[in-house]
Length: 485
Image (cartoon, rainbow, N blue to C red; front, top):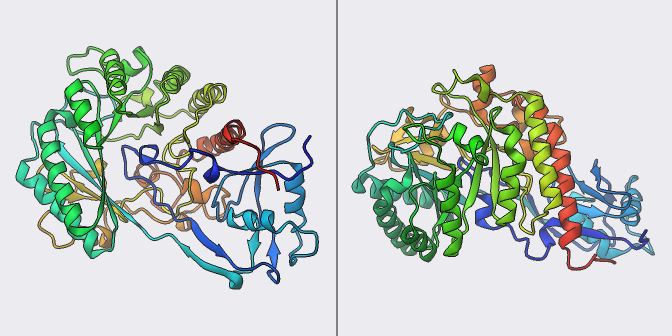
């Protein structure tokens, strides 16, 4: 057993910079609110040990994080843990202390320095304004859990351009430096020419206003052609493809309108995208119907080194009669743990904490589950603006508003995406800054309240330690060398 102190940080893993495709989701993604700190000289700094969470990896290493300000995921050995424990009683630096190690511990949130001596410490401000553009209500699939009635309505070119204009207006008025556009539906690839037109318009506005632009197409994949894939690659537009399992598991949830399974066409589309250098993000909807098939689809994803997200089924008015979709706690936990075992045996170099467990983003701390009511706009095919795509039929404003985001933020009647500290059952939970209480819409549907913990709380708590252990194993595997001090 190595007696030298070892401290490995997730953020410092070579090649582990969290990329945009790692953060893609088919929803309003979580808002990071981590601490950014510059450390003052430590000679007279009072330092204490916060209430850390340790998860054992093996006989030598532990994965550890600070539940209150989880700035980073860390792996430590017993020697480093001994150094941490020396600060159980608050004290200043003394002769013989390793200043470099202690400074790194403070920056990663493992130690707490006197607040008066922390320079430039502040919560991250919102930087990205995300917008869902509902290009069409039409779709060639009939997914079991879809919340849309699939009327034959398309977004016009004029409405699409006006929607993007509205996004940029709100971005400027509210100080956003980056815009993320999600081209969605229905099936978005039914409107591929419109995607290209809107991309061109958005790029022009981004250049004029000095705002960074990222774009992603959300698709079922069945209509993807080689030309489309090459075009998306050339234009740096990302692709997210929904795939819920291998073979019959996928087909049981995502058949064509006529009932035929879509798995082969979707899997062929993913391989087609890869053949031209376009790396799709795989969105997996986990339900009681497909939980047992998670290990196989995870193996398929990891073989292709793809980014992915595992999202739990959310009941809606159109799916409520299909009882086998419901999230039976033990069935979901067993299926997810079996998938985790596949990950452990095939640890990817790419980070996975942004999408490994439903709406929790374990890669960074946040106070809200998603961007609903904060930094998210949903434009339907007629130019109406809603808070969430699952409430797309309940708009609050439209493309003509001077600042649609201001009206979305001011709403007190629709979905209320409360900060986790205001949710009953969450305030004292060690996972609160990662989980943040789950999807507010799912919680309200199950309880009639927004200010309580998720109905999936027990599932989350059973899985979070396992996910962190996987990250610890990944750090140990891919760190170019165990950094010693």
